[in-house]
Image (cartoon, rainbow, N blue to C red; front, side, top):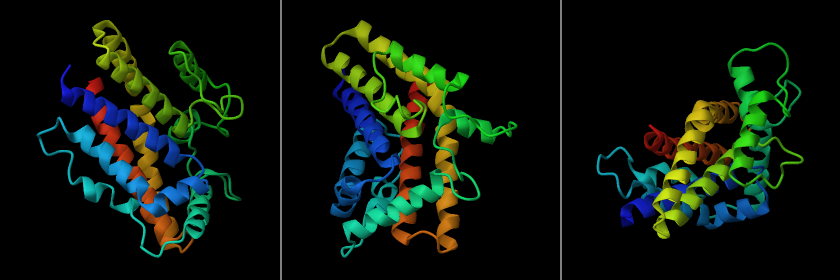
Length: 244
């Protein structure tokens, strides 16, 4: 086990955990963490760990990547929380005109593929495959009774769990377990995450920009969700390379 390999796996695990927290409906704790700068600092730290073993320059400027997570010095956490919740709702929750972007794999793919009818949120074949994969790895989301397992935040959390298990196996120098967990990460990336999360993040960046131009979301929320999309794509690109 190389120190660089361990650092990269831990950075990916922590980065996916951060993405899970930031993709959920933003509560006061998330707003406070963004306003205090801790989200920015965590994002930079994880990205530096992920990029540590890369010498090809493709990781880009990490500070620029995370720039949108920085708030103005006078940003109020309460006002920021309200702005983020409004943007999240306009992006991912049902409005009078429907849902702009479904944050669930099965529903997102349904819309992207132009399938007829309204997408179902529970018990679809795709959602059940995600749930089965999670069960086989010994974990289910805490909200599995009330939310589809294939939400963006649940899939990021599952990737974090898989990568954390790989890191623990690396630390224990258990080569068989390392291969098992690394294979599970690769399988989930190829079979699920890579097939929809990049498009989901691209749509998020496009839609939040459109909403901002229409004056419907605060500039701070536009910066945040734009940064979220870019950061998620950075992590997914690295995960896809490992799964290839």
